[in-house]
Length: 164
Image (cartoon, rainbow, N blue to C red):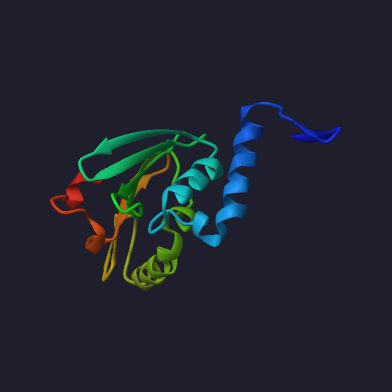
């Protein structure tokens, strides 16, 4: 974007998405940087941060926002009827930014991960089953998969296996 005679001149869709992402972040404050535990605004901020496209699917009592990142990784964010993201899942050639998609749950994840590092040898899937947070992830370069969710926030009738 450039400013000319008091008017904004837009130069392409990526510029518009970057500007929209910045406006969302400024308007909504720190919560927009969260995905898990965030709201619809956080989903839009994640889409902008990942420079991706988004498709939305309404399923029973929740909505899945599928974000196809520019690097090829797909992140699905599960939003409940009340408007909060209760789960995220990903698959693709690169790991997503865990701080970004876990939001306020990142510190809990990082502490659990650090505690496991001393016990892990070799390449094994990561399984974190903490009160209020479950994270399952695995894979290898160019093929990563995982999910994170808040068990107490799953909509009634939804199973953890439904998060993909």
